[in-house]
View 1 (cartoon, rainbow, N blue to C red):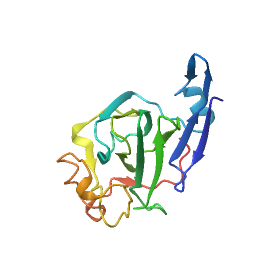
View 2: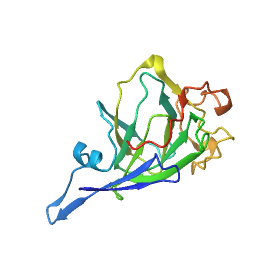
View 3: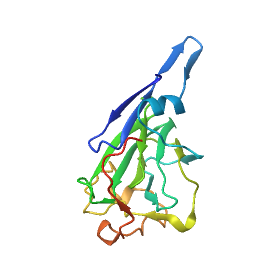
View 4: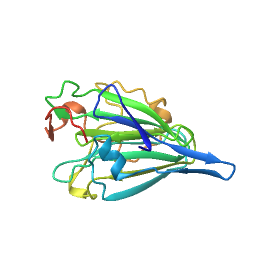
Length: 193
C-alpha cells in the first residue's frame, strides 16, 4: 500500500499520507490510488477534480456542503502553501453532531484529508499563494450547494485568523448558523468509506 491512513477525533474524517519517493532528481508519489483507498476501507468513487488558488494568507473558504442526492465526499490536498482544514458533523443523531475536527494540511507535510458526506467543509490559508486540489464524489449542483456560517459561536472553531482579518466571499459571510440548518443528513453509524 502506498498510503498511511489515520482517523481524527471524529473517526469518519481521515488524514491520508501518500508515500513520497525521492532522490537527487526530486520525488514521485501516487497521490490517489483507487485500489489503495479501497484496501484502506474507503470506497469513495471520485468523479470531479477541483483546484482553488488563494492569494492571501487568512482566506477562508467555507463552510460548504452539498445536499442529497448530490452530496459529496471530498479528498483535499495542498500542492503549494498550507491550510487549516475543518470538517463539521451535520449528521442528525450522530454522537458528534455539531462538533468539528481540524487538521493542518500542507505541501511540505504531503498529507491529505478525507471529508465524508454529512460534513460541512472549510479551510483557511496559513500562507499566501496557497493552492488546494480536491476530489469529489458528485458533480457540482448549484441547487444543492449549501453552507454553514464559518464563525458560528456554537461551533467554537479556532480558525487561526481574527474575523476582521479573514478574507471571505460575500456568500460565505451570510451562511446560516448550525441552529438554523434543516436536517439534511442522518447518522447511519460509523462509515468505512
